[in-house]
Image 1: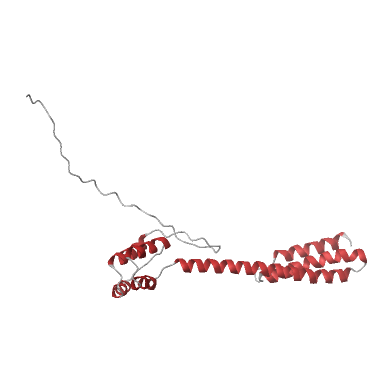
Image 2: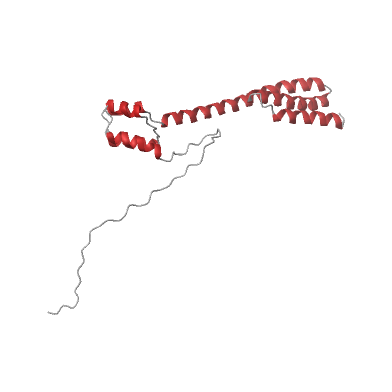
Length: 191
């Protein structure tokens, strides 16, 4: 095999290994594995005098191996995405969850702690507030739910890119100090 043929067979697997954007990881793995296997098989087959046979066997083995590896990577990414989606769905508390807790006679303090610990954000409309009150939710819990709209949301980490606008938090001035005092001085009195 001369230098030109070697360069041609070496560049092809490298191009295939980069993959195509419209192919799945399984397809990219099979394609790259087949190319690399064909070159390797051709080089090994050349030593025995069966270059074409070695290339064919190498391509088949490489494609199968590359496809299996690509499929494993694809399945792993799908499992990770599914776990992230499930964790986000489970961490959120909805209006119906609050109503269920009230109907199960869970105390207001426990419901409020549940809202705070899960980092829920409620943007209640007038209809939502009326619906909550009709279902026995106390004013304290409704007020806590309304207060969540002004809180800074907690961070959720995901592999998908998330584009958000910056959030600016301005803390209010502290209230003035109010107190009652009493003072007495002893000035110039003689006994």
